[in-house]
Image 1 (cartoon, one colour):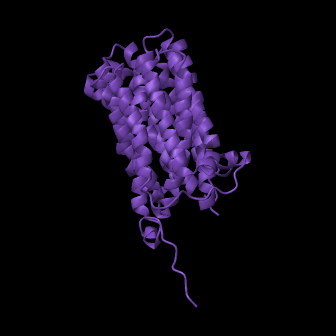
Image 2 (tube, helix red, strand yellow; image 1 turned 30 degrees about the vertical axis):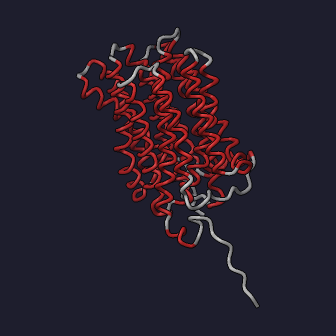
Image 3 (cartoon, one colour; image 1 turned 180 degrees about the vertical axis):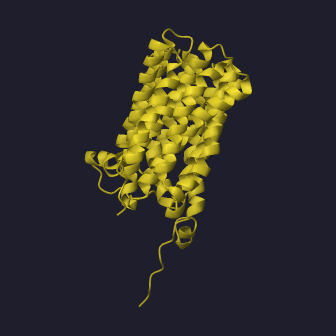
Length: 397
């Protein structure tokens, strides 16, 4: 009997594709990094453009929280959008939406109306990253997952830093910066097109699944929420503290870049160490370091530039490690068919922290002075230490 020839395989979908998980990991990291270039540029542009308005701290915190609320919405519906549009179409749609928002911000006067635009950008980012992080977790070998997530956040921090330091070379009103942000957003799906394997299966998804990570891995959930609150607050509100202290724009831009570079320096060493000594032990070290540096950093405004930049950079940068550790801790126990839903759940928790934290911190800054930025972040990080010491660890299946 004649045997039919097997159907042709799409490029990268044959048997050889099973041998290239690390290539796919690198491509997915590049996919996220390109997108984060646009996010880095806008995260620096927004507070500087809003800095000249009335009640600058509260307005900046409100606009930052609007982005996080939109991000939360994108995380909530991201898995359904993947099922409806397909992964590659969702990535393309999210990138185009974020790019259009970047150009709209340039064309719109700075003010409360920016909250709506940033909420749209946040929604696009939430959907995009829910898919991308689940994809990364699925393609990363289990024994190297902590290192893979650390490498992902390291690369994201590099391009984020490049985006923020761009303020030192162009005015915050320049079209070129907004256009560069739009180009970064659009480059991400082009890199994703070369990944050989599709994202993991969706599995059953319902509203109850949003609580799976807080219930199954509460330590990971709390660390992710704290990461959202700490990192978004530090990056978005630090320029207001710097301007209030009389620092120059290049000095503030250097501090913002130092935060990103410090995060890069800590990511991979602490991620690899967490593979060996445990995730929660490294989380405790990070929280203790942020709390201690929050006592020292406010005095840096009166120091010479180099030590001031170094201390503020370490204060803000080490906190970036928390998310990669919480994601690795979560994926230590997640099944492949749970990873999209669980990644969405973790990002929802992150978004909750990023939504509440900046606005609450900005209100404290308006009430008690811009130095309250360090007080609030130091206390919230110190509050997690007892949970890390005595909280329930996720049980492996």
